[in-house]
Image (tube, rainbow, N blue to C red):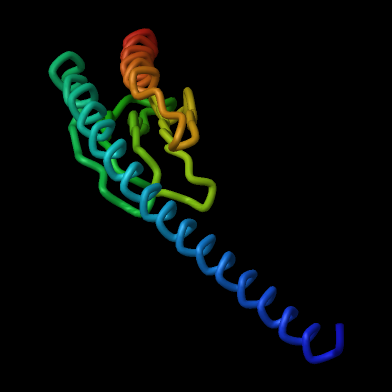
Length: 161
């Protein structure tokens, strides 16, 4: 085999490799779009469940205000309340209580990430995250956690007041 034949075979191998790489890139781009679509779908379902659960706190714990959360931190809901109490030496103290639960935006790791923070009378009582790979999601476990975290917050708030 002379140099000319070897050169043509090398070019053909390079073209096949390039085509395989372009196909792999196209498949990866499709999977990125698929991850975005899945994240949006799950985010909508869970943020509606979060809103439904957190919106019930003001009905059972007077003074709480409900708000929908749509921010760079994620999508979900929060319930908060400000109280004024008496401190030592006749001064007033302000107390802040809040539960916030959001589904975080899609990141580079392709996970669905649920985050919750709870504070009662200026003290953080929990800061939690739960996440799963988008292609392995168990929505029922997320719904159960949302329920559990809202119930736990209500119990902790009631115990401190």
